[in-house]
Image 1 (cartoon, rainbow, N blue to C red):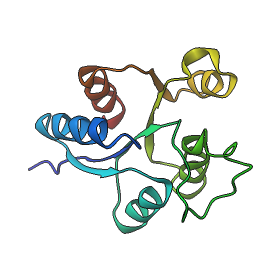
Image 2 (tube, rainbow, N blue to C red; image 1 turned 180 degrees about the horizontal axis):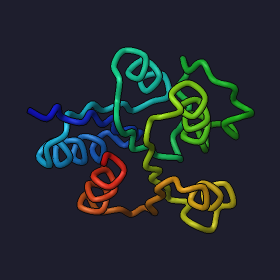
Image 3 (cartoon, helix red, strand yellow; image 1 turned 120 degrees about the horizontal axis):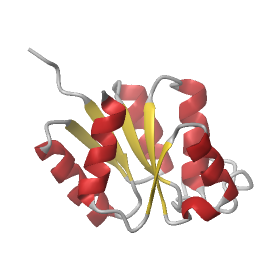
Image 4 (tube, rainbow, N blue to C red; image 1 turned 180 degrees about the vertical axis):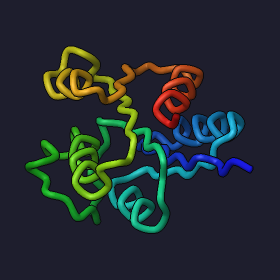
Length: 136
């Protein structure tokens, strides 16, 4: 029997994150939602995941233990999270979800390195397809 792949959906927009999680779950994955930097790190430390979907533009919460200059004063907390994931969980597959799209140099360079990047607005079907692709 195949074990379900674990997906962590990271987005500060709770409605989008919950909706995406529900649909990804219906596609056969075990899904958890995190809506902040701290929740994401705690979830990754607690359970192994196969895929993370990661929003780039997330604000820094008041209690977040993060270098604010590195996160450009909260505008790109997702990029700081991506760096942490690469350092601490290098085999973890990441799907970047970004309103910045291909015009942002850092996002473009991630795409050039083989990281899956989806530009917002993204449909749930596009997200599921990306998760299935990187989870294989």
